[in-house]
Length: 106
Image 1 (cartoon, helix red, strand yellow):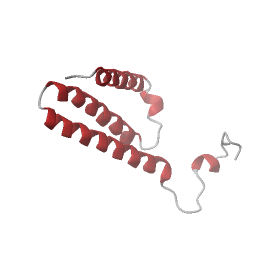
Image 2 (cartoon, one colour):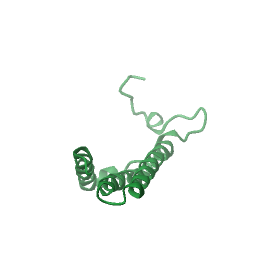
Image 3 (cartoon, one colour):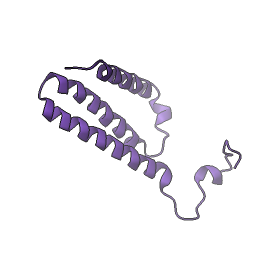
């Protein structure tokens, strides 16, 4: 059985993907951009599999769904580390080195 919230989640994800495709040039400036895209696409795949789970082979698709969600979370964590967390102890982040002021005034 397909649940309404699963379909709504898929439509929201597809809407977010459409916006990302439309703004791909500006998004491509993100550090480690391919990892970010991979995390989003694996999450969207998990949402599709969630709906398939309600139609046939429930146990199989349930496993694939949870593997997809776990993989997406792992990819997003790796992206965050690769993009923002990889620094030598005592180093200054690039935005501060370039003189860009932070919003909190630091």
